Image (cartoon, helix red, strand yellow):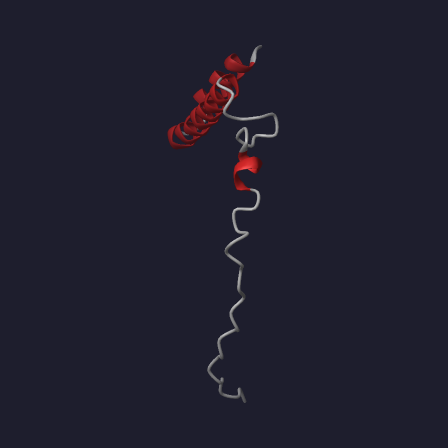
Length: 82
């Protein structure tokens, strides 16, 4: 029995709402795989799933904008518990 036949057999035994949720999850996985495949085919995603040139475009972008850590806010005093 192949995967599709096994899935069809199981879906027919499950409650309708459970079967619909599984079908939606599988549809989402297929859509994600299709999008990933299209991105790889068009060269917009490299092997590590980062867009090509991502690090070259983002490295050093904050050089002229130093990050400043603000002082923590003071908290209200809590009443003592008995």
